Image (cartoon, rainbow, N blue to C red; front, top):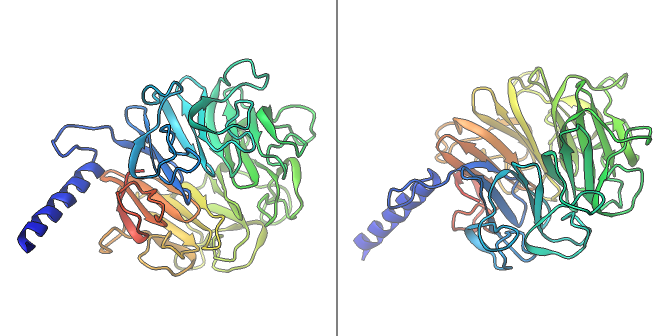
Length: 420
């Protein structure tokens, strides 16, 4: 019996390893993961190399997009709009709170799951177990010309090829940026700071629970929404119904040289073109990475793991949060390793502990004999993090909903092979 169990276990481990590498047990090549969405507390999704999307985890609102409300510990394929086959031609997949969206290579957006506030963007508040097309602001056809999509808790935003931004869904805290607090079931343009015309020249967007932010072509950053924890970076905690500039750390002038921005429910971080990171907002778990737990209403520099200097050579930035278990931030470095900092209740920092870190710490490999290496991309969710590497996809942190897609529902403090 013992010998048989070992054989079965060995075979199972080999199968998991092959799946993580994108190879079927029979040796035939399969589609591989090319992008992982931020894992929510209920589901995770991945874009595959063949342009399809798979999701795993809980499914009470149809957030897995496979036409059912049955959860799955292993990946299921998102269906197309007709429900007759897989959704194809996907260039980006993003997850919100019980809903998800896919950006198509043709410039449209399809969404599925909960639609209580119109976050599916199809002019209704009726949820859908399979994708529906986001419509244009007039409701006369699909939204077109989209180059990037970002999802919050109950709202979504799209950056368009004409450099404007459209948002839709919940707007009770001004997160749609149209100078109202009225929900919109169809996309509406984000207005400029004066409220006189659409916001233009935007090159990056990121949204969180009740806030939204963008980066302008001149390297400045704009944010709007609730601002409960100072997440807008304007030196106040006052809500903004229209975009306002993120201030410089000194409070004089505005933050410049911004490459990308990443918003979370309690804090926001910006990756600068110099490879340095600035963060602002709540800091109760050390998620600002400045070595303190002091809330900051203006940007502060994320420090290195050791010494007084800043964290350097950051290639990609991601933030997660919205849970009492701890908000956190992570960065991919130019040497293809990853670091994380902030709350760590479920092990979402990936350092093998559940200890909060006020400065960046290296993400370890699964056997804790070194750092996770050859990282290609990283994505932080509320209380879990995933990284795509040359050896496959790995996740760590909260997995009680089965959102890792590895067939289990166990939390982990170190990276494990996964496939949402």
